Amino acid sequence: GASLVVTPITQLKTDIRRELTQSMLHGEHVHETARRILSIKDGAGNQALPNIAPFRSARERAEVIARTELSKAANAAHLQQYQANAKVLPTLVIRWSSAMCGKMCTRCGAMNGQIAKPGDSFECGVAAPPLHPRCRCRIVSEILSIEDYTARFGAPEKMVYSFLKKKTTRSEAVRNVA
Image 1 (cartoon, rainbow, N blue to C red):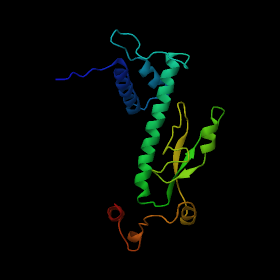
Image 2: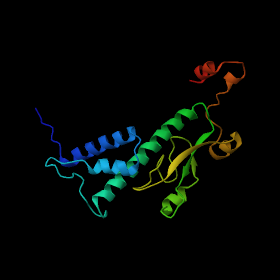
Image 3: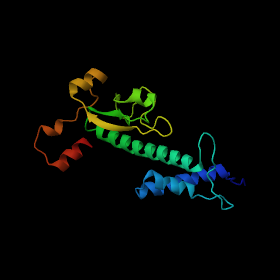
């Protein structure tokens, strides 16, 4: 039989994913996540994350990985929830929100305020941030009026208001739209 060869890079990626997951589960800050990544050891007991250009240090590289991957996970979770919410809120959209500060790049500045339907790509070609390493952007949900939604995207695909025509309990309404 064929043996499975695990390269040091493959193992490092697996170890980083594990530490990112643990950090998210514990609600840790980016700096604590970076410390977790830096604590990963190679087979000889040395720090496994090498310092490579353009980073000034392995610590800086770990912080970039932590910030970018935590942002990616948070935005993906928000997007998944917004897609589920859009099934019962047909005029729900997502808005790109850039961190409006001195660290913001021109690409992110150009994206600020743009809207898309949950699951569709923004003009930059991605469905949610991050747009690049160190990206501090996020997505937020917004409910447009039917007129505004229709002007931008056409009529909503599915209007789910039939349960409002008769008196129902909250649990019946949820069952009716599910």
